[in-house]
Length: 315
Image (cartoon, rainbow, N blue to C red; front, side):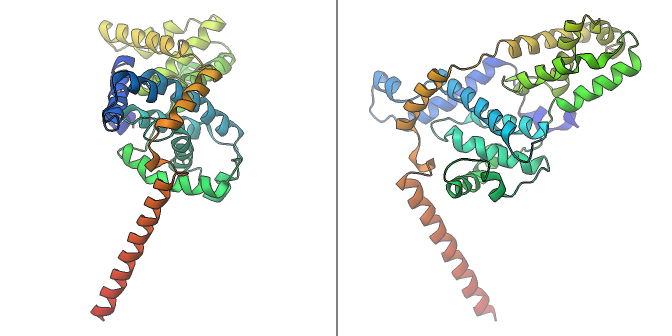
Protein backbone atom coordinates (compact mmCIF):
# COMPACT_ATOMS: atom_id res chain seq x y z
CA UNK A 1 0.00 0.00 0.00
CA UNK A 2 1.36 3.38 -1.01
CA UNK A 3 -0.17 5.06 2.05
CA UNK A 4 2.18 3.12 4.35
CA UNK A 5 5.16 2.90 2.01
CA UNK A 6 8.75 4.09 2.46
CA UNK A 7 8.23 5.96 -0.81
CA UNK A 8 5.63 8.23 0.79
CA UNK A 9 7.49 8.58 4.08
CA UNK A 10 11.02 9.14 2.78
CA UNK A 11 11.10 9.76 -0.98
CA UNK A 12 8.43 12.38 -1.68
CA UNK A 13 9.55 16.00 -1.56
CA UNK A 14 7.55 19.20 -1.43
CA UNK A 15 8.66 20.36 -4.87
CA UNK A 16 11.52 21.21 -7.18
CA UNK A 17 12.89 23.81 -4.76
CA UNK A 18 13.46 21.23 -2.01
CA UNK A 19 15.01 18.79 -4.49
CA UNK A 20 17.34 21.50 -5.76
CA UNK A 21 18.39 22.30 -2.20
CA UNK A 22 19.23 18.64 -1.48
CA UNK A 23 21.22 18.27 -4.69
CA UNK A 24 23.09 21.51 -4.06
CA UNK A 25 24.07 20.27 -0.59
CA UNK A 26 25.41 17.01 -2.06
CA UNK A 27 27.40 18.95 -4.64
CA UNK A 28 28.81 21.34 -2.03
CA UNK A 29 29.74 18.51 0.35
CA UNK A 30 31.75 16.72 -2.33
CA UNK A 31 33.58 19.89 -3.39
CA UNK A 32 34.31 20.93 0.20
CA UNK A 33 35.92 17.56 0.92
CA UNK A 34 38.30 17.90 -2.05
CA UNK A 35 38.94 21.55 -2.84
CA UNK A 36 41.86 22.01 -0.45
CA UNK A 37 43.31 25.50 -0.99
CA UNK A 38 41.69 26.07 -4.38
CA UNK A 39 40.19 29.49 -5.05
CA UNK A 40 36.51 29.86 -5.87
CA UNK A 41 37.44 30.53 -9.50
CA UNK A 42 39.52 27.34 -9.66
CA UNK A 43 36.71 25.37 -8.01
CA UNK A 44 34.20 26.59 -10.61
CA UNK A 45 36.54 25.60 -13.44
CA UNK A 46 37.45 22.20 -12.04
CA UNK A 47 34.30 20.83 -10.34
CA UNK A 48 30.76 20.42 -11.66
CA UNK A 49 28.14 22.93 -10.58
CA UNK A 50 24.68 21.77 -9.41
CA UNK A 51 23.29 22.84 -12.79
CA UNK A 52 25.91 20.77 -14.61
CA UNK A 53 25.17 17.77 -12.42
CA UNK A 54 21.48 18.09 -13.31
CA UNK A 55 22.38 18.13 -17.01
CA UNK A 56 24.46 14.98 -16.62
CA UNK A 57 21.76 13.15 -14.67
CA UNK A 58 19.14 14.05 -17.27
CA UNK A 59 21.41 12.78 -20.05
CA UNK A 60 21.93 9.44 -18.32
CA UNK A 61 18.22 9.07 -17.66
CA UNK A 62 17.77 9.16 -21.44
CA UNK A 63 20.54 6.59 -21.84
CA UNK A 64 18.88 4.40 -19.19
CA UNK A 65 15.55 4.54 -21.04
CA UNK A 66 17.21 3.64 -24.33
CA UNK A 67 19.09 0.74 -22.75
CA UNK A 68 15.88 -0.63 -21.22
CA UNK A 69 13.90 -0.25 -24.45
CA UNK A 70 16.49 -2.29 -26.36
CA UNK A 71 17.01 -4.88 -23.61
CA UNK A 72 16.50 -8.57 -24.34
CA UNK A 73 14.33 -10.16 -23.10
CA UNK A 74 11.91 -7.19 -23.28
CA UNK A 75 11.51 -5.42 -19.94
CA UNK A 76 8.14 -4.76 -18.28
CA UNK A 77 7.31 -1.08 -17.85
CA UNK A 78 7.49 -1.38 -14.06
CA UNK A 79 11.20 -2.30 -14.28
CA UNK A 80 11.92 0.85 -16.29
CA UNK A 81 9.94 3.00 -13.84
CA UNK A 82 11.67 1.48 -10.82
CA UNK A 83 15.12 1.83 -12.44
CA UNK A 84 14.55 5.54 -13.02
CA UNK A 85 13.13 6.01 -9.52
CA UNK A 86 16.26 4.41 -8.02
CA UNK A 87 18.51 6.58 -10.20
CA UNK A 88 16.69 9.81 -9.30
CA UNK A 89 16.62 8.96 -5.58
CA UNK A 90 20.32 8.16 -5.53
CA UNK A 91 21.32 11.56 -6.90
CA UNK A 92 19.12 13.53 -4.51
CA UNK A 93 21.75 13.07 -1.78
CA UNK A 94 24.82 12.00 -3.79
CA UNK A 95 26.99 13.75 -6.34
CA UNK A 96 27.71 12.64 -9.90
CA UNK A 97 31.34 13.44 -9.11
CA UNK A 98 31.42 10.91 -6.28
CA UNK A 99 29.66 8.11 -8.18
CA UNK A 100 29.71 8.16 -11.98
CA UNK A 101 26.14 7.99 -13.38
CA UNK A 102 27.19 5.36 -15.94
CA UNK A 103 27.98 2.86 -13.17
CA UNK A 104 24.96 3.78 -11.05
CA UNK A 105 22.62 3.71 -14.06
CA UNK A 106 23.44 0.10 -14.93
CA UNK A 107 23.33 -0.95 -11.28
CA UNK A 108 19.88 0.65 -10.90
CA UNK A 109 18.54 -1.36 -13.83
CA UNK A 110 20.06 -4.60 -12.56
CA UNK A 111 18.66 -4.07 -9.06
CA UNK A 112 15.23 -3.09 -10.43
CA UNK A 113 15.10 -6.35 -12.38
CA UNK A 114 15.44 -8.22 -9.08
CA UNK A 115 13.02 -6.03 -7.13
CA UNK A 116 10.31 -6.29 -9.81
CA UNK A 117 10.79 -10.08 -10.07
CA UNK A 118 12.15 -9.89 -13.61
CA UNK A 119 15.31 -11.69 -12.66
CA UNK A 120 18.09 -11.72 -15.24
CA UNK A 121 21.42 -13.39 -14.38
CA UNK A 122 24.35 -10.98 -14.51
CA UNK A 123 25.88 -12.83 -17.46
CA UNK A 124 22.72 -12.43 -19.52
CA UNK A 125 22.31 -8.84 -18.33
CA UNK A 126 25.72 -7.69 -19.58
CA UNK A 127 25.21 -9.40 -22.94
CA UNK A 128 23.00 -6.39 -23.67
CA UNK A 129 26.07 -4.14 -23.38
CA UNK A 130 28.82 -3.40 -25.86
CA UNK A 131 32.42 -3.49 -24.68
CA UNK A 132 34.17 -5.33 -21.88
CA UNK A 133 31.24 -7.27 -20.40
CA UNK A 134 33.31 -8.81 -17.62
CA UNK A 135 34.30 -5.34 -16.44
CA UNK A 136 30.67 -4.19 -16.57
CA UNK A 137 29.60 -7.20 -14.50
CA UNK A 138 32.28 -6.55 -11.88
CA UNK A 139 31.28 -2.87 -11.61
CA UNK A 140 27.55 -3.62 -11.31
CA UNK A 141 28.06 -6.24 -8.61
CA UNK A 142 30.53 -3.97 -6.82
CA UNK A 143 28.12 -1.00 -6.69
CA UNK A 144 24.96 -2.99 -5.94
CA UNK A 145 25.37 -2.95 -2.14
CA UNK A 146 26.40 0.72 -2.23
CA UNK A 147 23.26 1.57 -4.19
CA UNK A 148 21.01 -0.27 -1.75
CA UNK A 149 22.70 1.39 1.23
CA UNK A 150 22.40 4.87 -0.28
CA UNK A 151 18.71 4.20 -0.89
CA UNK A 152 18.42 3.23 2.80
CA UNK A 153 17.21 -0.19 1.60
CA UNK A 154 13.88 1.37 0.57
CA UNK A 155 13.51 -0.74 -2.55
CA UNK A 156 9.74 -0.93 -3.10
CA UNK A 157 8.67 1.56 -5.77
CA UNK A 158 5.04 2.31 -6.58
CA UNK A 159 4.79 3.27 -10.26
CA UNK A 160 1.89 5.10 -11.99
CA UNK A 161 1.13 2.20 -14.36
CA UNK A 162 -1.05 0.25 -11.91
CA UNK A 163 -3.25 3.19 -10.80
CA UNK A 164 -3.67 4.12 -14.48
CA UNK A 165 -5.32 0.74 -15.09
CA UNK A 166 -7.41 1.22 -11.96
CA UNK A 167 -8.73 4.55 -13.23
CA UNK A 168 -9.58 3.04 -16.61
CA UNK A 169 -11.64 0.31 -14.94
CA UNK A 170 -13.38 2.77 -12.59
CA UNK A 171 -14.20 5.27 -15.34
CA UNK A 172 -15.64 2.59 -17.62
CA UNK A 173 -17.73 1.27 -14.71
CA UNK A 174 -19.01 4.46 -13.11
CA UNK A 175 -18.75 7.25 -15.70
CA UNK A 176 -21.15 6.44 -18.51
CA UNK A 177 -20.41 9.68 -20.38
CA UNK A 178 -16.97 8.33 -21.29
CA UNK A 179 -17.88 6.36 -24.39
CA UNK A 180 -15.10 4.32 -26.05
CA UNK A 181 -12.72 5.50 -23.32
CA UNK A 182 -9.91 3.23 -24.55
CA UNK A 183 -9.15 5.79 -27.26
CA UNK A 184 -7.32 7.96 -24.73
CA UNK A 185 -5.01 5.13 -23.61
CA UNK A 186 -2.16 5.95 -25.99
CA UNK A 187 -2.01 9.62 -24.94
CA UNK A 188 -2.27 8.73 -21.25
CA UNK A 189 0.53 6.17 -21.48
CA UNK A 190 2.70 8.61 -23.42
CA UNK A 191 2.21 11.17 -20.64
CA UNK A 192 3.34 8.66 -18.01
CA UNK A 193 6.36 7.73 -20.15
CA UNK A 194 7.22 11.42 -20.34
CA UNK A 195 6.75 11.82 -16.59
CA UNK A 196 9.52 9.28 -16.02
CA UNK A 197 12.02 11.79 -17.42
CA UNK A 198 10.90 14.47 -14.95
CA UNK A 199 11.09 14.67 -11.15
CA UNK A 200 7.37 13.90 -10.86
CA UNK A 201 7.96 10.57 -9.07
CA UNK A 202 9.87 12.43 -6.34
CA UNK A 203 7.10 14.98 -5.78
CA UNK A 204 3.72 13.35 -6.48
CA UNK A 205 1.99 10.09 -5.66
CA UNK A 206 1.59 7.49 -8.44
CA UNK A 207 -2.19 8.03 -8.45
CA UNK A 208 -1.76 11.79 -8.96
CA UNK A 209 0.51 11.17 -11.94
CA UNK A 210 -1.85 8.55 -13.36
CA UNK A 211 -4.92 10.77 -12.96
CA UNK A 212 -3.11 13.65 -14.63
CA UNK A 213 -2.31 11.30 -17.51
CA UNK A 214 -6.01 10.40 -17.75
CA UNK A 215 -6.94 14.08 -17.70
CA UNK A 216 -4.32 14.84 -20.37
CA UNK A 217 -5.58 12.12 -22.70
CA UNK A 218 -9.25 12.96 -22.12
CA UNK A 219 -8.65 16.63 -22.98
CA UNK A 220 -7.27 15.59 -26.37
CA UNK A 221 -10.44 13.59 -27.09
CA UNK A 222 -12.87 16.17 -25.70
CA UNK A 223 -14.08 13.92 -22.86
CA UNK A 224 -15.35 15.90 -19.80
CA UNK A 225 -13.22 13.97 -17.35
CA UNK A 226 -13.21 16.76 -14.73
CA UNK A 227 -16.86 15.93 -14.15
CA UNK A 228 -15.85 12.36 -13.23
CA UNK A 229 -13.10 13.64 -10.93
CA UNK A 230 -15.26 16.15 -9.09
CA UNK A 231 -18.68 14.41 -9.03
CA UNK A 232 -17.63 10.77 -8.68
CA UNK A 233 -14.02 10.38 -7.58
CA UNK A 234 -14.08 13.30 -5.11
CA UNK A 235 -17.76 13.11 -4.25
CA UNK A 236 -17.14 12.70 -0.51
CA UNK A 237 -14.22 15.16 -0.36
CA UNK A 238 -14.54 18.63 1.11
CA UNK A 239 -14.40 21.65 -1.18
CA UNK A 240 -10.89 22.44 0.05
CA UNK A 241 -9.70 18.86 -0.57
CA UNK A 242 -11.17 18.89 -4.07
CA UNK A 243 -9.51 22.20 -4.89
CA UNK A 244 -6.16 20.91 -3.63
CA UNK A 245 -6.47 17.77 -5.74
CA UNK A 246 -7.12 19.76 -8.91
CA UNK A 247 -4.21 22.06 -8.04
CA UNK A 248 -1.87 19.07 -7.64
CA UNK A 249 -2.96 17.69 -11.01
CA UNK A 250 -2.12 21.03 -12.63
CA UNK A 251 1.31 20.93 -10.92
CA UNK A 252 2.01 17.46 -12.27
CA UNK A 253 1.17 18.56 -15.80
CA UNK A 254 3.31 21.70 -15.51
CA UNK A 255 6.39 19.85 -14.25
CA UNK A 256 6.12 17.05 -16.80
CA UNK A 257 5.50 19.32 -19.78
CA UNK A 258 8.32 21.69 -18.79
CA UNK A 259 11.00 19.01 -18.47
CA UNK A 260 13.19 19.52 -21.52
CA UNK A 261 15.67 17.17 -23.14
CA UNK A 262 19.36 18.01 -22.69
CA UNK A 263 21.19 18.85 -25.94
CA UNK A 264 23.73 16.11 -26.61
CA UNK A 265 26.61 18.56 -27.08
CA UNK A 266 25.89 20.16 -23.71
CA UNK A 267 25.91 16.79 -21.99
CA UNK A 268 29.18 15.79 -23.66
CA UNK A 269 30.87 18.96 -22.40
CA UNK A 270 29.83 18.21 -18.83
CA UNK A 271 30.90 14.59 -19.24
CA UNK A 272 34.38 15.74 -20.26
CA UNK A 273 34.60 17.97 -17.19
CA UNK A 274 33.47 15.09 -14.97
CA UNK A 275 36.40 12.95 -16.12
CA UNK A 276 38.82 15.31 -14.34
CA UNK A 277 36.97 15.75 -11.04
CA UNK A 278 35.35 12.36 -10.37
CA UNK A 279 36.23 10.36 -7.28
CA UNK A 280 38.89 7.91 -8.43
CA UNK A 281 38.18 5.66 -5.46
CA UNK A 282 34.84 4.86 -7.12
CA UNK A 283 36.26 4.59 -10.65
CA UNK A 284 36.60 0.90 -11.68
CA UNK A 285 39.28 1.89 -14.23
CA UNK A 286 41.54 3.66 -11.72
CA UNK A 287 44.56 2.18 -9.95
CA UNK A 288 43.22 3.47 -6.62
CA UNK A 289 39.97 1.53 -7.07
CA UNK A 290 41.75 -1.65 -8.16
CA UNK A 291 44.11 -1.46 -5.17
CA UNK A 292 41.16 -0.97 -2.82
CA UNK A 293 39.42 -4.02 -4.29
CA UNK A 294 42.58 -6.11 -3.84
CA UNK A 295 42.85 -5.00 -0.22
CA UNK A 296 39.21 -5.89 0.30
CA UNK A 297 39.76 -9.36 -1.16
CA UNK A 298 42.81 -9.83 1.08
CA UNK A 299 40.75 -8.83 4.13
CA UNK A 300 38.01 -11.28 3.19
CA UNK A 301 40.58 -14.05 2.74
CA UNK A 302 42.14 -13.24 6.13
CA UNK A 303 38.70 -13.46 7.73
CA UNK A 304 38.09 -16.87 6.14
CA UNK A 305 41.49 -18.10 7.36
CA UNK A 306 40.78 -16.93 10.91
CA UNK A 307 37.34 -18.50 10.82
CA UNK A 308 38.75 -21.84 9.67
CA UNK A 309 41.39 -21.63 12.41
CA UNK A 310 38.74 -21.07 15.09
CA UNK A 311 36.69 -23.98 13.81
CA UNK A 312 39.78 -26.21 13.93
CA UNK A 313 40.53 -25.13 17.52
CA UNK A 314 36.93 -25.84 18.58
CA UNK A 315 37.25 -29.39 17.33
